[in-house]
Length: 437
Image 1 (cartoon, helix red, strand yellow):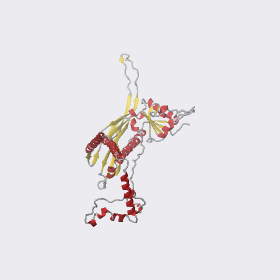
Image 2 (cartoon, one colour):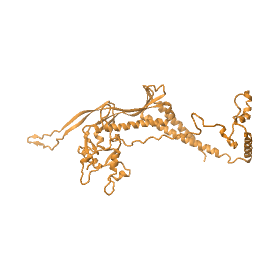
Image 3 (cartoon, helix red, strand yellow):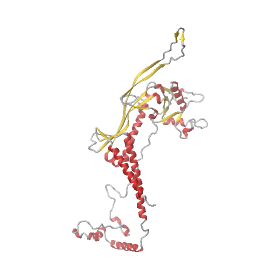
Image 4 (cartoon, one colour):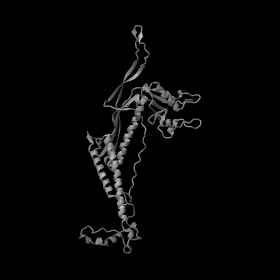
């Protein structure tokens, strides 16, 4: 089947269209104070177009390769007898000429060299002189060179470069448990309820001649602040390297963004509030605590799964329904692998079969961001709030130190956010270190 030229033309047109789209996106990048401003949407659109361009280019190359194969296949399958005889005669002449002569002598005796007439006819031969190894046998080709060349390249042959294999990334994040809002402020001020006296009761319509008085409940609030904090890091790269290796630029961008997400989870859980740190949930005063050894020890000691359920009860008693559990992978492994005396798993079978990780109907996020031996159970949806001042983004600049004259650039990843834990009692920290005896 012949190559469809119309299909090839269609793909070439699509390639030109994608390239024009990417140029339009690139032209929309803004340079502010020497820093190239690229939004997340612009970067995503540019990357999608680049992926399409690579795929279309691969298809075009494949079709063109098929066309070359077809043209080759249309040539005569065998040479004529006369052609073979001429080739044999030519090879015999070459072999005879090679007897006792070097390549230099053969070259100076060639018709091509003699056509120069000692330089009087110019320095360019009318046609190149060549000696094909297929034309003769028994000639020592090592006379051409005695060793491999030095420098770069240092050997013959083509180079195959395999794609870079990037490290695996965490798929579940603590952030996913929180509702998120955007803000334009530098500090979030809010009131945290620290006390509530519920005096609600039944009331008679009248007490004697007077109407019944309703009782008064009381609330206690304290003002709190959640300052916006910045999480950022950067990497230096040579402009030429990134221009020559587009895949490397993509890896740098992705790894920098991933590094922000790792630190974000760390801050949300464990930030101590000092300096430029967030005040993480586990470091917020007023959260509840539960120790594994506080559970039943007879006739069967509590498991870690039991401790999670008892911690969830504390949240329920504070009128907050838990919406998530954060566990270290080693602790979640212990829970999933817990068996009864008959070797039957105690955790829901759906988890072992690849279902959504849940325990006691509560979604589980397993992450090394939380210390082994500690778990966090809570109503993440109502007990706390994340605020995005600036979502994670990538910026590129050469205005750093002497990078401009060195043709180097800085790739910077940055985000700004705040965390407000408005109802600490909605969270329960579980201590697994004190196992029941």
